[in-house]
Length: 314
Ligand code: ADP
Ligand code: MG
Image (cartoon, rainbow, N blue to C red):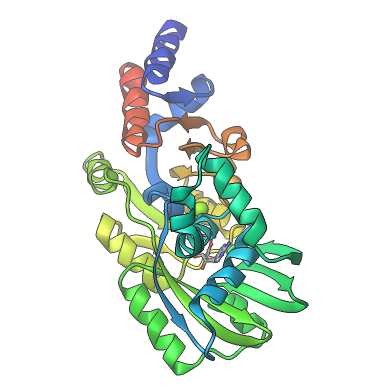
C-alpha cells in the first residue's frame, strides 16, 4: 500500500469513528487471527441493573441497600453504578420526581445527605470493594473476596448464587461485621450487535475469545448467548494480558477489544489493541484503535479496512 492509500484508509476509518494510530497498526489488523473480547462493558452494555436481592439475619431491605450503596459510592465499576442506582430508586424515586432543578445536581444533593460515612475504602480489582462503616468492615464483591476474609457462605446462599449465574447474572455478596448479610443479582445485557459480530468474524476466519473476571457459570452463560466457544473466566485484571500473550505464542496476530476498565495492560500487550466506547484515558493511550461509536461492528470495519488497504501487496 502506498502512503496515500494508508492516508485515505485512515480518513475513511475516522469517518466511521474508527480511529487508528498509524500505518503499522492499520497494517497489522489484516492478519488478526484471534479477537479477545472483554465481557463487561465490551460485549455487554456495561449498564447493569439489580434484578434480585436476598437478605439474611433479619436486616431491613432499605438499611441493606443504604449500607451497600455507601460502600460502593467511591467505586467506578459498572456493578457499583447498578447498586447505587437501585438503592437510589428504592429510597428516593418519588422525592426526585417532585423536586425541581437539574436532575444530576438533585441526585447528588440527595446522595450526599443520605449515604453513610465511609472510611478506609479500597477497591480490590477483580474482587470488589471493602471499607469501614460505623467502625465495622463491609465487603461487597464476589465469592473470592468473601472467602479470603474467612467468612462462611451458607448452602442457601450458594444455591441462590448458582441459580443467578446459570441465568447469566452476576451474584454480588455482601458481608458486614464478618457475617454474610445479603446477596444481589445483577444483569448486564449483551450489546444488540454482539451476536452478529461474532458470527461475522467467524465467517472471516477469525476466532473470538471472551475474557472476564466474572465467575465461570455467568461467563459461560453469556458466552453461549453470544456464540463464543473459547471462554477464560475468573481472570484477575493482570491475567488478561497473559491470555493475550498465550495466544500470541505460536506467532498468531491477536486483537484485544476492551473498555479499559481493568484491561489496559491487555490492550497494550495485543498486536492490535482496540479501545471501545467512552474508553478511559489509559485505554486510549494503550490501544492502537479507538472505536468511538461503542459499536462492536467497528471491530469488523477496522479489520476489513486493513484487508482492503493492504490486499494488493499480499
Ligand atoms: P470484568 O472482567 O467482567 O470486566 P472485573 O474484573 O471488573 O470484571 O470484576 C470481576 C468480578 O469482581 C465481578 O464480576 C464482581 O464479581 C467483582 N467485582 C469487581 N468490582 C466490584 C465492585 N465494585 N462491586 C462488586 N463486585 C465487584
Ligand atoms: Mg471490564
